[in-house]
Amino acid sequence: MIQPTDALDAKSLSPNADALISMRGIKKVFVTDEVETHALTEVHLDVQQGEYVAISGPSGCGKTTLLSILGLLDATTEGEYRLAGEPVSGLSPAERARVRNRQIGFIFQAFNLIGDLTVYENVELPLTYRTGDAALDAAERKRRVVEALEKVGMAHRTKHYPAQLSGGQQQRVAVARAVAGEPAILLADEPTGNLDSQNGEAVMGLLQELHRGGATICMVTHDPRYAAHADRSVQLFDGRVVEDTALAGGSRSAAHVVPA
Amino acid sequence: MGILSKHSSDSRQISESSSPLVSLRNVEKAYKTAGGVSYVLRRVTLDIAAGEFVTVMGPSGAGKSTLLAILGMLDAVFTGEFFFRGLPVHALDNKRRQQLAREHIGFVFQQYHLLDDLTVAENLSVPLDYRGVNKSERASRVADVLDRFNIVGKKDLYPSQLSGGQQQLVGIARAVIAEPSLILADEPTGNLHSVQAREIMELFTRLNAAGTTIVQVTHSDENAGYGSRTINLKDGWMEP
Image 1 (cartoon, rainbow over the protein chains, first blue to last red):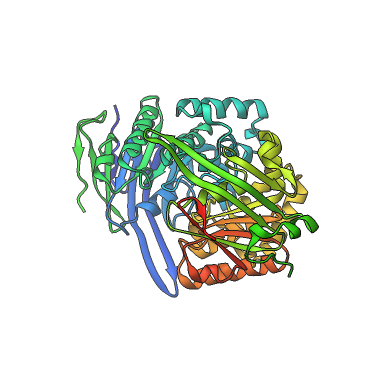
Image 2: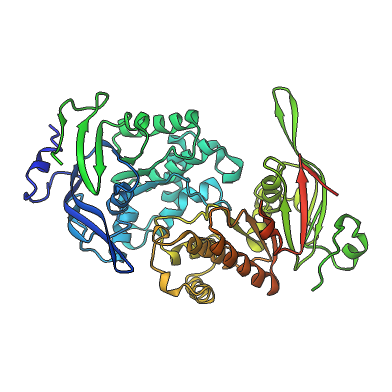
């Protein structure tokens, strides 16, 4: 039974060892010209294997900062973060990069495909950055790239360049790039923000399909229609989680509200 | 500098004496639509000499980005002829065309196209990885470019930790790292405020002065002012 919100009440509790993601007391402070900005004041969050979580809130609420920390692009100022049971809050940038490359798949609003690399090369690129015991040989890379492109219905476009694709197709390729690494979790930052509603829906459908196939997804969105695709909604305000709700379409029925 | 006269279509004599870097002859691109055929480029004939800094302007939908994609060999579906350093691009197979592009062309995009999960140094290394440059050579070229662009201090940062202007600086550094003879820039300052935009344009000017040929697409008259020649497109036609 999944009980992602129980730990949130007991803020002093240690991280949930069973959760894929467990955050306790996460703070993030940016200091510029002697001004301190508290992007995240105190975030407690558990995400279970296989969950699909939408993170929303007004501009400046800290959702992009939270996603950067979840994705190990940025370090916490304070607090404890465990990813797949491994403490990652104290890692050096290089160690974070190593964990990130293996465990996290990113999907960005602007697709972030490289325009002068083909579809195939764009999907393969992150795999080529794996070294040591995680290094993938050419045959394994190829298998993963082809499989990922098949998953998103873009296997017939391997030799195309991004400019030859529609926005929706580019985002499908970006999704393939994210899943080719077989990450523990997919992080999506406004994945439909640059798409018209039809292509937006198609990308959301694709994420849902991946979720049904077992993928764990955290998606930042400010659009409630898209948030509704997830099975759990986390609302941020002023750097805190102010609401954590199971959604009707999701796998759980209990709703839970954290007192602000 | 040996820059071509403004009326490049009359430049046959110049083309013969010094073969242009780029030569388009009656290039056309069209899409089939429900109502018939929709043209994106019409009979574009254009020479660009090595060392030029050319600006392509025109309203949205005029064919600017399509022209840039064809020049960059990212789009090979067109009719007419395209010679690059005398080589017939229109007749090359995919692999040769890609090799030619990777050897000679660097791209700068409005959206930077940096990978947010790679550091600045790793982003810079990407074009070299795809050009078969060996590891030690890659490291030394990355170090060199970081130095030239004065971004050594940013090498371990991620794009999200940089301002837009800094990200585009990295975008340009990535374009030049493979030492292209031609840089193609699509609205390179479109996402930047005016001070950052000016810095980026001055950087292009210096690269051009050092010998790199540049073709930029822009809506900005100020940016066009940095170039040596402007081509106006409208409804796919080059305006005289």
